[in-house]
Image 1 (cartoon, rainbow, N blue to C red):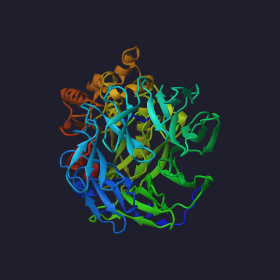
Image 2 (image 1 turned 60 degrees about the vertical axis):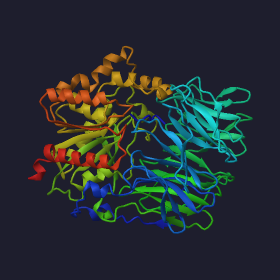
Image 3 (image 1 turned 90 degrees about the vertical axis):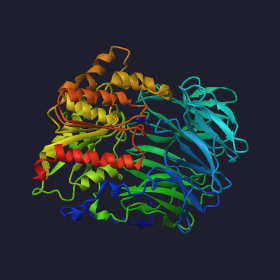
Image 4 (image 1 turned 120 degrees about the vertical axis):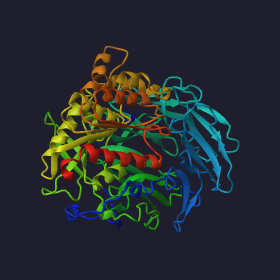
Length: 634
């Protein structure tokens, strides 16, 4: 399960080799293998060196993620770690530019540790050497002489905040978490820390704790709203937070620590998803979740006036990193027809430079499908948003099969962007409709709350009505529509096959919840602060809610499954245990229904290793070719 329920002035336009969907429709694209599509490179940005000459990235070109650096001047790539077993994810350069930090876990067990490595030798040091702990990078001290780390090494339920000096890496406890509060941001002088506590998945509380006086000030109120701390001002006189208090969408607020005055800085008719302040306070950036795609706004921080920022055609800025000098901004930019690429934007010259080209050179981007945002009416007349991929070969004289896709959650969101598994299926002739069912994030507070303690009912019906929308399209074979999803979306798949057994022809379930009673009781210890919020939304398995939870747990209805099913599972998954998939597969076998089971011994919740992703693609396609794409093959 995913634990989610958390004016543009363009001077420069850079094309990403896309064309109008109407111009592409009707053409016969070249079919690509999963190996070809997975030979694309997935890159994520971590940081810019102190001298603005290099960028640190995570790169999966080897089959798993390793740390690389790219020289900005000539875009040459240098491999810094060469792991062959576990993925290494870049965190940051040290100030000397020769050492760097990265994170890695073991087989997807989510117990990440932070490692110190050197570019000039092979030495690696685990600076969080606490057995069985989960650790994450929390940021730098103001003078960059130390880093902050969140760790549950003291109490597996809660994350404390530690300070590790670069001189000796000895940890000093900054904040001991005995209450289940979650650290949000730390002031530069280390006097104040913002904390949140989950009440429900729709409501949390926000506090400001003075670490010197121990005074804890409640910033939130009693309304059913979310409160998300962002950055402190450089002088620590105030801090920023996001909230949807008295609004359907989140907006940005500035809070004065001395006077407790609040100033609304920015709001719009979409959620503000993030506020980023550059190191010396010269710029700030806003991320707006606008209909499943990011809108990014750059401002002069002192005047709050918008300034020039590049707009990239069909580009979705996924991430942004300021250099310490504030001269460069490292952008991770995605599109629906290309994996994310890295760009550097120079704030002085206004130049935008592309550093990477992640699409496999064997692939013609015109053979891939640009995502569309569509909406359909559900069973109760509610308008439901969705992301849609229509095969280029589809027309009324060439009808194609289709899949309805369910995202993770509860409370996730399918967004416009490159999805290799989706493009693979669409390239092979399957239309895919990614439904943002009621309860999805990104469409306002009221929409988000609509599935509370109604899971397996209204949310599930949204997928059925998505299927009905597909059936209305004259290029879809109305008898060849299946359902696919992972995690919470996998539960949707299984519930569709059990509670509405005649609606979908097949199911593709990736590590989906089969038994809510067990899953909610086996929540990882470090989810303790979020556990009660999940109980409030889904139901408490230790109460009378257990009756309803059992009813919407596919394991107790497996005998109703009459359609072919394929199940994928990671053996090391700590969120949806292997037993969930083991037992649902055993149950379906008793029905005499075709069921395939793919278990990866070296994966957790979601598959990271490229070879396993390829196997998932190929086995999914073979399954669909056998059981779904029957008439359209003739």
